[in-house]
Amino acid sequence: MPSNLLLFVRIFRGENAQLKILRLYAALGIIIAVCIGTAKMAPLEGSELAVIQANGKFTNNLYKELAKQEGNVFFSPISAHAVLSMAYQGANGDTKAAFASTLGVPDNKLAANGYSKIMDRLNSVENVTLLMANKVFLKSGLALQEEFGKTAKEDFKSEVQQVDFAKNVAAAQTINSWVEDKTKNKIKDLITPDSLDGMTRLVLVNAIYFKGDWLSKFDKANTRKMPFYTSETVKSDVDMMFRKGEYKYKFDRDLDAQVLELPYKNRDLSMIVVLPNKKDGIKGLEQKLAATDITKVTEGMYPTDVEVFLPKFKIETTIDLNQHLENMGLGVMFSDNANFDKMITGNEPLKVSKVIQKAFIEVNEEGSEAAAATGLQIRVKSARPRQRDSAVFEANHPFLYYIMEFGGDERVPLFKGKMFNLY
View 1: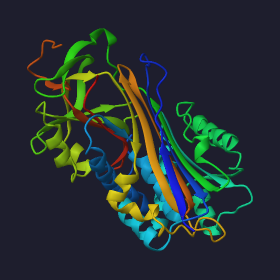
View 2 (view 1 turned 120 degrees about the horizontal axis):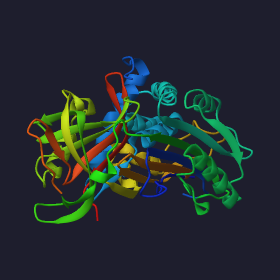
View 3 (view 1 turned 135 degrees about the vertical axis):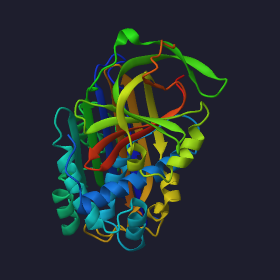
View 4 (view 1 turned 120 degrees about the vertical axis):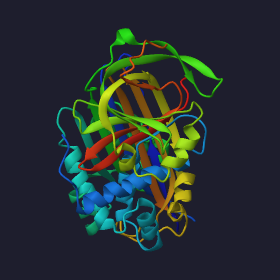
């Protein structure tokens, strides 16, 4: 008897357009069900370094999939990578091998140990609020296999809570309440009641939350309407922020783009904006970045005076990840050949049915706000005067951006996006 796995990700609106802070939130949930029928820190090393490097490659691979469609893109790669790494712990056989290849981590225990260290570090940063948490919701009367349960608790720092999934409304409320609490009420309704029933066996959830201010805020008095070009001839008027100050910056000839770092109060966290030199250069930039490690993107940046023009923006996305993950090599987890026999006691076969991510980001003068949530279910089978001595970074056409944590010489992409249009 086959089983299905459903993964949901959701991003929620911020409080309003006048927020004076930067906030990022992400939640990732895995639901396992059974159905009858077919600052800069010290250099990193070991498992933590391996997982961070793997997450960087996973970010590029997933973005390459998401960018096949036109329009804005926004997602949390670490949220998706973390929750899939939890599912990896319960996989076996060819399914385990597929996780190893797609996640870029050759051993599931290496992934677990790496995330244990990553979570410890992310949850202890200063001057901002950054939280990453996991939880296992298990059907009442069932038990996790000993090894999976130990890994979930000790490495993924996850609590285990018994839930009666047959009472689907109450069960969904229990799960969603935990997510809301961990994301300061920014991520709601991650799990819908109709995704749960008496056949549901397990729900794994990951939540990531970030709140912080820019190190150097933009003055609202300098924000004015300016054109944003989606092509050489198509444009729309947007609220363009402006600030002149010292930033890390570089002109990258290989990428044919400018790169700018906008730090938060904790300088271990920054927004990196990559702006192609040509108004229609986003496709070419995406192709070049597809095989470029994020550390190379920020390599060679230097502090200099920069005139920064950056639009205020708000993006919400809902992404069905099934086909994307299949294209990346995880198709077996959706098939009747899926093997998740290391998760719970008993002999019920499981497989993944759906993976969805919803995400949200808002950027304004004093910061930005972002959120993402993912769930997975398994069942039985205007222009201003410019100074000549300043670099000018005018983001008035499509660009890419990352929200990143700097771990030693490594970059941890917490969120990644493409601003393509603002209308």
